[in-house]
Amino acid sequence: MVGKSIWVIAVVLCLVCMSATPSAHAQAVYGSITGSVTDPQGSGVPGAKVVVTNVTKGTTEEATTNESGNYTVTHLIPDAYKIRIEAPGFKAYEIPSVRVGADTAVRADAQLQVGAVTQSVEVTGEIPQLQTEKTDVATIFSTQQVESVPIFNRNFTTFQLLSPGAQIQGWGHAASENPQGSRQILTNGQHFAGTGFELDGTDNQDPILGIIVINPNLDSINEVKITSQDYDAEFGRAIGAIVTSQTKSGTNEIHGSAFDFERSNSNFASDPFSQTPSKIAAGQHQVPSGNWNQFGGTIGGPIRKNKIFAFGDYQGQRAHVGGTAQDRILTAAERGGDLSALGRPIFDPYVTSDPAHCVIVPNGAGQPTPAPLASRTQFMGNNGTTPNVIPTCRLSPQVQNLLKLLPTGATLADPTVNNFSGSGSNVLNADNFDVRGDYVLNSKTQVFGRYSYQKFLRSGPGLFGEVAGGPALPADSGGQFSGTSKVRNQSLATGFDYTFGPTLLTDFRFGYMR
Image 1 (cartoon, rainbow, N blue to C red):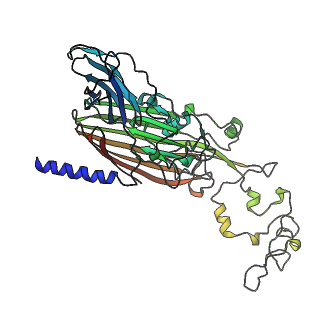
Image 2: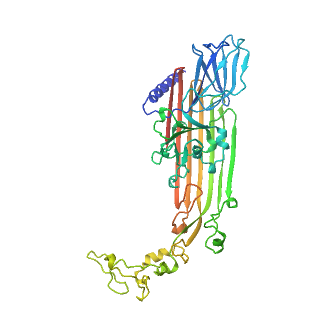
Image 3: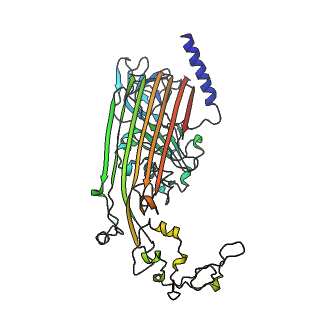
């Protein structure tokens, strides 16, 4: 026991030192309950015992009212709590459930009635909340709201658009560097990179791109708070908004969930500009096949009741969604050098020594001699009589072989419009999971740890297919894409807090992301 006590003291001292360093920030992940206890005449009741019990975990926190009858219970994980207040000569006062959010202070006042402490008065109505402890302006989403609000593609960052003063950016990062689909959102007119993202009290923002790193699974979120004004000084790096998210933890009851969302060609809308019946009938292209599926679940429960809790979640995605694009490519005649359909003169950019334009005059360095603009001559074909036709001798064999990999464009009345339409399916597969553990050593000490892993595979054939590639085809999410991209995002967070007394506590947080 002595060795254990020395170890605990050493760890606490180290944490006190580390929590005092100037770089410590992003600590606002807990909530608190504060209030005043009075007698029937409205005078403060000092020395009253306040017991706060987590409804789902069974853990308890205790406080004692001061000489004015005021109390505060801090470092509460966002959850529902039961409050019981006792004082000699008064009936016990009970509040069955109070919801505590992250970075918020809930006020719960109590007016005791004279009587035996074995008697109790239970408050059954909801406690009205007028925020007096903080001045920030924020929008808070509870677990039920996060899981119930219909969000396209289950994209967590979309919640930011539901807060006042938010507007989506007109452009987005490349799909290869943002496979998690982070939305670029402006808040109060500020740049999207001015929004700070926090996950379990640690940084969750790419320092280069300014976007969220771990776009968390919706079923892993306990609470989201989007603060747009007057946020705490610890968030001074942000200029637009602060999005703080807390992951779920296990409870005293084993619980879980499962989900599956699917969309397919049967309910995909066709492109009204390119996927028209007339074009499909003409054989220019066909509506590409596609399927989009997101699935997963959660599980949580106690490792040891009232002490150790675990929670995990998984979300998978298998998507191959088709898109159609158009472009202007060479016709069969143009591949052979015949550019006469363009309706404009085609000039030789180099100096040649023969009428057929086959012998290019070299300069002193052995390179082709550029012809001045005013003295360039028009191409006249192999026989020297067909204008705007490049002679066969000037066609590159290498380029001709490359052109064989590409489709041939249709000959249209207007040679300047797109003459090719192609379709293909972009693939975006993902495997994401989170694991979290919480350990309540005693009423003064709490420890938690979380690890998040997200793996993405994105590939697109391009307009001309897998071999030739070409311009990107529209993708279901993340913008247009062509090629292959493999990305892994990881995040680790752990925390330790120790309460020395009513006026002194320490909180250590460590975060790592890649």
